[in-house]
Length: 275
Image 1 (tube, rainbow, N blue to C red):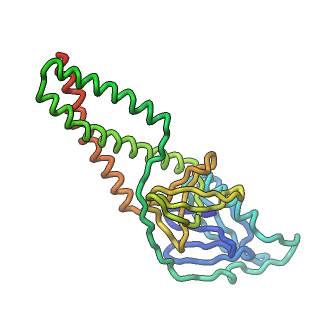
Image 2 (tube, rainbow, N blue to C red; image 1 turned 90 degrees about the horizontal axis):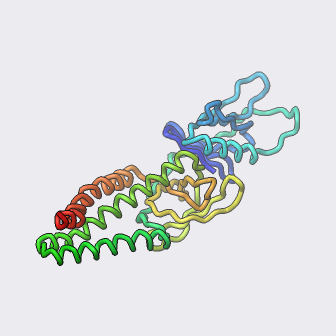
Image 3 (tube, rainbow, N blue to C red; image 1 turned 30 degrees about the vertical axis):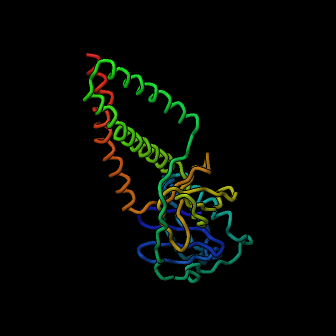
């Protein structure tokens, strides 16, 4: 279980909490933690360390991407804390915090893929194919030979432009959903096949999940940072490097003029033949 924000990240593992903040990495053992509190806004959590009576406890505050991630992280950490006898004297948890070196960051390349949905493919392909054949016959009947050449050559820009926009919109939709209600975790990378990376993680309910990531995911300490949909845990995306986000945005932007060219070469030629 992890929590990542613009100013740092923290994750729970068997040895405790690993906090990365302000360029410093700290290992916080669970016995040093008194509790994790969620801010009233629900978008940040504070790790409160143990402290002797009469002294102020050390706190580490981390903002999360959304309320669901913050709440799930706080619940998981508080459930993992060791039991303490009522009235037990507590030491200063700050003395147990270990400062570590900055982590090495690596990237695992992966190609973005599309999950096939048979029903949608059949419906989406049947209607355009029938319409295309009808337009082809129309151009031949009226004898618009130059328009016929454009009509045949325009298939590629039309298909590639439409596919690029559809794939980009689908990816943006999935990421928007996960940004709104997703839960951040760290996963163990597994095997790679056909441009996909299989990852394994434990969700907020303690269930081990296996998902395939189709993005180039950032890896920190041999862990992949994921966000998954708590309603559909099999739906997950990896945290993308900035250059990959830029490339995807450029790909979607280039698809629009390609689609416009395809529309001019294919359906517009049929429109001219009907005038």
